[in-house]
Each structure stands twice: as structure tokens, then as C-alpha cells.
Image 1: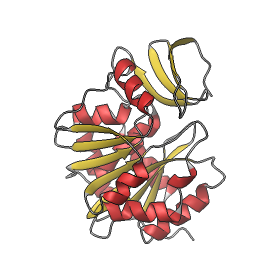
Image 2: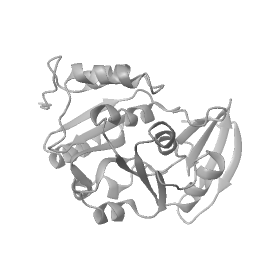
Image 3: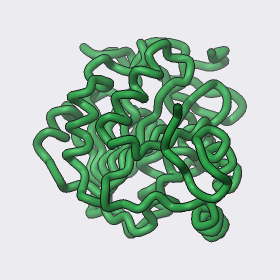
Image 4: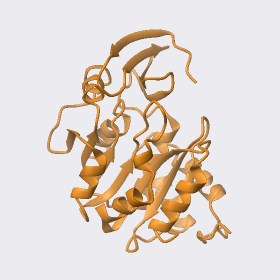
Length: 264
């Protein structure tokens, strides 16, 4: 939960109320509740503030050659604008249902206008995924609302659609709450969709867990390879990737070298 200090913006829409608060130089977006959806350092607007966003960006360790990504759920745009600034080789499409979120992300969170590497679309993420099968290298889901993960974004059919939207060597990443009572159900569905080729990464308090699903032609790196990639990536990114690999190793069955994929 978040203790408000200074409210600097409020926007009402037919969907969810969008509020912006600021505390000690950190600006945050809220969607109809005190829960923080996105945060930004006002003096360093492209830096990643929330731990879960570091976990999402660790996808780069699994698929270093990624060239295009689809992100469902803009929020304050932390992930989108970081990729835009730090990963110029990636073209990204962002789908956001609430037009006020897009407006506020640009007016208060320094999200850039659309260009050849960033295309923010107002629309339904589920429909977009169903209409773009087999086209995405890296699909990210970060679509929390005021009541958590929308029900339509956690069904078996939805996860199956996400897998179909990926290229044969594509990567799926979703931000989930570890305290969600249905977390185990969501994990089982994702594991069914990706034939058990799934890893989860706790990112620390307040309990966000990033879950990754690997398409058959995307090799799941061993821990030695991941640590080497993490060390290299830390030269270019201000993200503690090695700590994230430790969290990944602690949360998934492995023999110290490779992941075994069986949670029994």
C-alpha cells in the first residue's frame, strides 16, 4: 500500500480513474486505488524504479537477439520508455485500453510520442493478440487494474492465444502477484500452454513474480550461460541481473547447472 503525499493529477474516464502522486521526487500512477501501478524518478525519468520491471527486463537474458516486442498494459510507461531508450534494436508495440492512461503517461511520465521504434495503440490487448498470430519475438503482459489482474487475462484460452502470437522461438513474460489466491492456477495454465517450459522469478516485496514461457525453438539457457549474460548485460543496464538470476535459481527446480522443469 502507498501513503499519499501530494496528488498532482486526477483524470476520470469511462474505465478507471487515473491519479498521479509525487513523494520525495518519485512520481507514481494509480488506477482507481492506492496501489502503485508505475513509478518514476522525476530527475531520472527513464530509470526503472520498481523491482518487477527489472524482472521483466531480464527477458533480455533469455532472448538477447529480440527484435520486436508487444507489451499489453502501458501504465506509466516505465518498461516501454526504458526499452525505447536503452534497446534501440527493438521495435515495440504497446496496447493500452484506457485512453487516459496513454494521455497521462505522456503528460506526466515522459513517455515519448510514437516513432519508428515505439507504437502505442489504444485498444483491446486480447483482440490484438488474436489478430497477430506468430508475429512477436517477446510478448509482455503487465495489465493490472484497480482490482488486480483482469479475469480475461488469466484464462487457459488467453494463455494459449499468447503462445500462438509468438514466433516459434518467442518468449512470453507476465507480471503476477504471488499473493493472488489463484496464482497456482495461473501457473498451471501457463505450464500447460508452454508444455512445462516455464520459469518464475520472484522480484521481492511487495510480491510481484515474473513468469516466463518459452516456445519450443527457444533454448532455455543453463545457469552458467545466464550468469555470463547477466554480467555482460550489467555493463549496459543499471539492473542487478545477477541478483535476479539468484532469485530465479531459488524459485525453480535445478541441479545447480540446468533447470529441470518438474515442480513435483
